[in-house]
Image 1 (cartoon, helix red, strand yellow):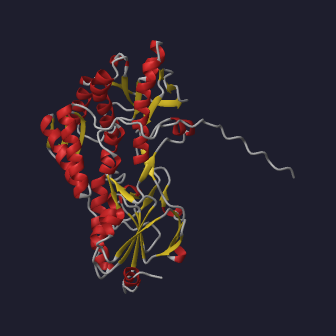
Image 2: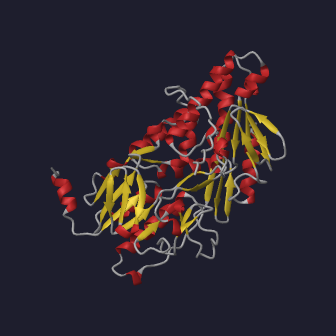
Image 3: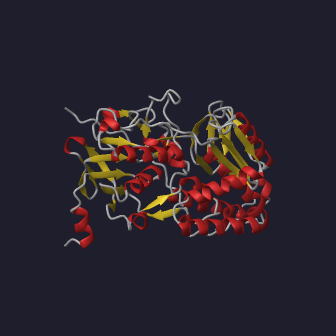
Length: 442
C-alpha cells in the first residue's frame, strides 16, 4: 500500500525526469528541479553523495568517510517532487523510454545520465588488479588501511631492502589527485611515522610520484606547475617524469625504458574514463568513453536523453575542441544550464551551454598550494587558505562542514592526522590469469 507521500508523488501531472548518478552534476540538477513542474527520480547504486575532491584526505586519515558523504534521502526529503531509489542501472532502453535496473524498469520522459568516471588503466588488466585506486570512499579506506598495515609490517622486518619495499609508496599520475596524495603522504612521514613508529627509520619511507609527461598538474599554468614541483621536492617526494609504466605484479613496477621500482603499494591516478550505461553505444565516443552531446547536452541521435558532467563530450565549443575538462565546475554548470533549458516552455528557446572557467587549485601540504584564477596566479599560504575555504564551502551539508572544519583545526594544531585506525584491514586478492576458452568440436 502506498504512503500518502508516494501517492501524492505519483499523482503529480508532470513529465518524469530520471537522473542516473548523484555526483556533482546529478545532485545539482535535482536541486534545480526541486519544486518545479517535473517528477524527478534519482537513481544511484550508493545511498550518498561523495565529495570526491577530499577523498585523498580520507585515504590519508585526515577525515572520516562520513565527513565527505551526504545521504541522498536527507537531500531529497524536503523535495515533494523528487524521490531517490537505490539501485544499479543495467541498461538504457531508448525505444521504450525507460531504464532497466536491478530492481526492474523505470520509465522516463526525460533521461539525464550523470554517471561520472572510473579509473582508466588503458587496458592493462594486471595493473588494474594490483594497483590501488582513489575514486570511491571504499577505495580511500583501502588505501588508509594499506599504508597503516605497511607501517606495522615494517616494524617486524630487519632486512633493509624488505623494509624499504614495504615503505615505498608509488603514485602513478601527476594530476591534482596524485599531487595532493603525494603531499599528504610526505607529511605523514614527517609526523606519524617519525613520532609513532620509532622502531622504523622514517627516511626509509619514500614517496615516488611518476608521470609519463614532463610536468605535474598538466592542466594548470606553468607558474603553478613549477610551484607545485618545488613544494613536492621540499617535502621529499621523488618526482620522476617521462616514466611510462608498463607492468606491475604487486611487488615490482616496470617502466618502458627498462627501469624497475620495488613497491608493495602502487596508487594509480594516471587517468579516468567515462562510465557509460549500456544501450547507447551508437552515441558513445569509445576512446574517452563519453557520450557525444550537442551544445544543449542532448546525447547524439536521441531526442530526450541528456548527459552532463564527466560523461558528456561536447566538441562544438571552439574554446574546448576536445571537450570540456572533467572537473566539478563543468558538471555543476552543465546541470544548472540543463535545468534552465528543461524549464523553458519551448525547445526553440533553449540556450546553448557555455562553460565559464573559474580557475583551478591544488594543495600539496601545510601552507603549500597553488591557485590559477584567470590572470591571477599565486601559491603559498594565501593559496592554501583559499583552497581550504573554497572546499569547505563546497561540501554538501552543514554538519559535514562543521566536522571537516573541526578535523582540519585539530590537525593544524596537533600536526597529526586524526584517524589512524585499521578497522577494516585491506587484503590483496590473488591475481588469476583467465584460462583460454576451449573451442567446441564440430
